[in-house]
Length: 338
Image (cartoon, rainbow, N blue to C red; front, top):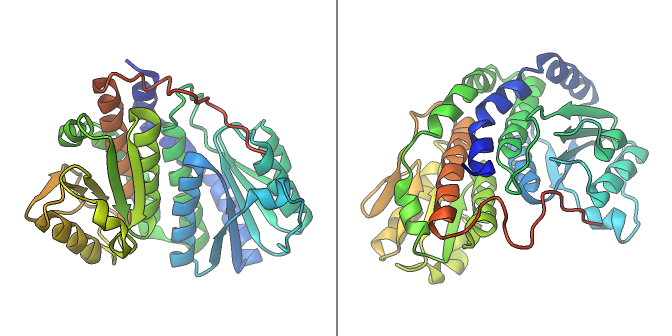
C-alpha cells in the first residue's frame, strides 16, 4: 500500500482530532468577535493554498469580510511592508517551514494584524512567527502528496468560521464529517480512474468554495498521476478555455448543492451535449458520467467528502499509469520558497 493511500485513510481520524480542539476554536472565535476585522488575509502555497482559497470564499460569504490572498513575495523578495492593523492574517501550512510564509507572518504581526497559524507542526518557525496557533493535529504525513493535512486544513477553516459566526448548522455538519469522510473513501470512483488511465489532460471545474476543491484536484492530477490538470471556475470556463474540451480533453465537475449548483450543472450538461467527456460529482444529466456520492448533508462539508473520494481515485490511477504516487519526479515533501 502506498503512503498516499494509507495517509488518505487516516484523514477521518485526523479531522476528528483537529475538530476536537473545541476550546481553542472557541477562544479564537471570541477574539475575532471582539476584533471584528473587516479584512482577512490568507497566506499559503500549494495544497495549503487551496485550503486558503476555500477559507476565503467561506469567510467572504458568511462573515461579509474582504478575504484576500497574501502575496508572500511582497515581503520576501521586495521587502515592502503592508498596512494590516486590525486585520486577521491566517497562514496555512503543513510543515510551517517555507521562509516566505514565515517572513510574511512576521511582517503582518509587526504591522498590527492578529496572526493565526493553521499548521501541522506547532513547533515550526511559522507557528513561532504567529501570535496564535491552531495545530492541525493530523499526525506525521510522509507522502509527498498531502492528503490528510489538506482535509484537516479545510475542516479547520470551516470550524473557525462556524465558531466565529455561531453557525450551528455548519457546526453540526462538522460533527458528522469524520464519519462521512470515511464513508466517502469507500465509494466506487473507478469510472474516473478509467478515464485517468487513458488521458494526459483534464479540466477540473467548481464554483464558489468548490473552485478551491477543483484546484486541489488539478494539482494532484499533475503531482501524482502526471496528468495536466487545469482548474477553472464554472463561470470562467466559457470565456475561452472550453474550446479545448472534447472527447479527448475531459472535464471533471465537483459540484456542491448551493446557489452555484444550477449554473454549474447546466454548463456540464451543455458540454456533454457538445460531445465533451464529462464526469461529475454532485451533478447529473444526459451524457454526464455521475460519480457516486453520499447523501447531501451540508454544501461545504460535502465538498470535503468529494475530495476524499478523489484522492483515492487519483492514487489508484497513478499506479495504473505505472507511476509511484509516493515519489513524484522532482518533488519533495517540504517546498521552501523564498
